[in-house]
Image (tube, chains in turn purple, orange):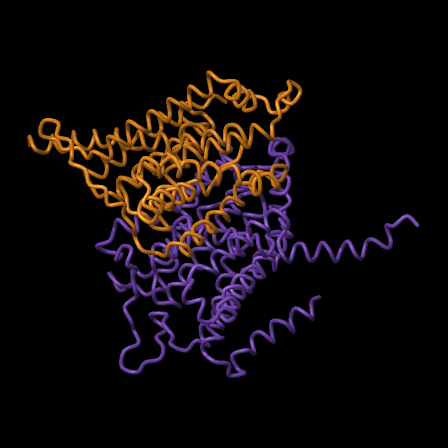
Length: 331
Length: 288
């Protein structure tokens, strides 16, 4: 598996060198970016902490960087760490009491939902500074034929963004793998099954949950920073609130949130579905702009009912069962 | 200073009127949670469909409003029963969070279906009513109608739950799900009836909202979250708690919106919600 993974990464890294057009490259970049964000969500989601509040972290990441740049001229190099710190503070504010008072399941999902809605509403309410529902654009640093500005973290060449976001996606997978082999994961697995029993064998329930929440929130807000710097346009609806929070959960579920590449498969699947429908329907798509959303919603419902482990999860399980059957069959 | 106080009083009165409406909206959701133990994330989208149903029947088919509204209620009630039968039932035995998420998928589906069917334009029923003048305050008539009708809906639900056989069965199931089949109650039937009842309450909410607000496919997102939070604040499944929470929330939104901006009213209400969750995670009237 190891050499195969290296070959895969090398092949992916070579994609921009093949001279594919800007639009396919843009699709791949978005795919990697959402794969990174969904992976960040799954880091806590798969351990039973189903958060509908990740829109808050994405929104804080995106808006902090852009607002600091536009209003105070702070470089994103300074803005990004501040954005992450702010997200961690929000995660701590909501996580610490939630875990201490044992708010789990439905309640946890709905309390975190309140957090992402508060973030969206604050962004809209501060419309004099943020542009409200109309969104915001970072002041451009690419005047007079400049194609890139390292200080402003703006690059007009999509290939640069491809490698930046590829690196973050790989780093996200690395964090997943590190966490997967750590004691924290074992502790959290135990907590997921039986919180009291886990506490009774000496696991610090609050601290373990908080740790994984902070990791996930910090990673997600970096995703928000990348989104803002790459797209150069942010909007309260697309980076915060209930819609994007649900989109993260569903992307992770569709791919399979219990396996490392599951959220990535979810991101690829979502994008292929959208682009595939657009190509297949052609002009009809322009007439029915919500058709992809309708099919997406229907597929999510079917997924959760019939394939709760997601595409990759179900595929791996099927392969494992096929391998196991000949040995296990009693004559 | 005098005018200031009149406006503040008006905000308080509007808050009370809004509270009645929010109480009705959260009642159906709360009932379903109490009985079936499922949160319908798409509850506000059912209301949105109901609003379109009333609008289309009235403006396209030429039905009088008093006929279109009961038809809208019936359509959403049927939709609620269908939602339970085809979407919730297959995942009743699965992880609780899957039940929440499956209705989240329905949220996208219903929203997209409405966009496909009706487009993204804002529609308005175009009912104009004179405001009611009380002293120096002017109060919007549709809000008063909505308040009265919402309280009537809450009262009717209470009567149904406390005075009828099926209401008794619904309450019994919510108290002990395992024992009721032994008493000769078919839980599946009770679940479907409860879902239809929850849908009917959403339909009634739709009839009242359509008098005051423009209709568009994403309208559910603007009052859906507040509806869930009211239920959680009151203690999920606790009908009385939901009522109290609805009036508290409405005051925060209305008076907070009066002093600052409307969004800040919501922000204050949500922040209050988060604060209460840490003080009483089981809700203000929760028993556990």
